Length: 633
Image (tube, rainbow, N blue to C red; front, top):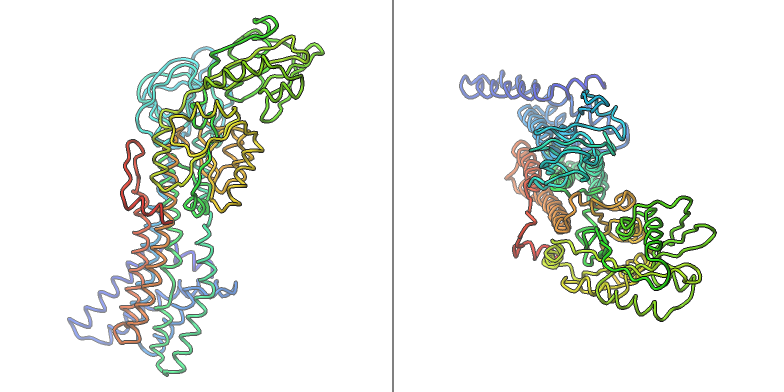
């Protein structure tokens, strides 16, 4: 039986074409040559050929105790053949097969975004040898640290850092931005991007499936295979709906004694459009996001994202560019050069953006220094049997002692908008204050205003800096609430509190210290440049470091869920109208099946609208319809 099923699946289009020709011959025999016997025989042949794959699928369904659409159609077609309605049997099976073919073709198109990404994945790379020669190698055999030569027009085959050369990269495949980016020595490049001009030598940091491009493909494939909450409900509903139609058909038959009416009820009650409508919307919505640098980790994310009414932002690396610089050093005691060198070496063992800024202060290395991170406060270092404390004022006061002069300097630098880091030993014989400033992302204000336009009621900034510094940094942003001196646990607790107050909270972050809040949020959104931990716990990843993509993510989610609901409405309305038409005498089995299959095509085409529905973030003005949609969902 399996081999027969495989044969019919493999040759589905050929069999449909054959049946189409036979139907044309039958109609010609009847209307041109008035040979009714030939018409009946040809229609019977079409009905039997068309019934075989449907019946085999129905038997497979019944074996697992599932009354599927194929069971209803099989019973209806067999019934039509038994009572001699060969034309009805032929038309129903032909329309059913046509619907399957159209469904397959259109679903392939909705998945095209992912298949295109897969085709674009690099296969080989030009590896630079020690003697300067190049050798083409399969991407799966590239080792970390190997140097890759990339020429004009080439696709970047690995993630890595430019060690020589410069050029312009089209990064649209990774972040949706088609404008070429100027790249030079020291910059990061990603697999899948295209070098439009220049020559680069890149040191490999990731290859194959481990690259950003590889992870994007994997993430989108997993998301498209997942089921949304709505889809799960529809599938559960269908399990009961289809047997219910069968029971109703039997009851109608017992009451009316009209066998043809009974089998017509079976055909018209099939929930085809209902079953296909939600997944086609989901696949199209996720594909649209993938094309535009927004990665959804599962279709269920869209259900949650469209309900978000509050968004909380981490500050460093999220609202700011994440490249802070030390602009003020005040030494209260000890040798300045020694303190700077010590601070730089301690911070070199941390990945925090503020730590990276301080690590640049000195290249002189100190051996045998041991450090321990105090989450949200700073670091404790051991050197030559002496402890050093590097972090915020709370860390210093907790481990050494309060110092009014120190507090005064810290407050002064904070009021100027600096993030403040203090270095002290146990007796404060070495004591210094570092003022570090970061710049707001250039698109931050626009991005936040777009979110307000989309109906987000409250925008919140959560920062580890003191309140004065946090307020100074966010002064030019349309932020509703600013909370400073927030430890990672405080951020997570804040999110929980807002949820308890009935809000649906999204949290945007990029660092390890953001992971507790990201994990607690209804929707966790990670910036593409973020740490692996932040990306792993997130629901949505913005591949491009552009906050305006948040509005894209929410807009795509809301439109996708709306599209799902439209498809459900179309499917249910079609079934209702068919039954009204059936019991009032306007609909018969053949034309009813045509309307049923047409409704499937309508929901598929409606879902496919999402593929082309891309809203440019730059300078976008939301329409009244889009605002109303956002506010009412």
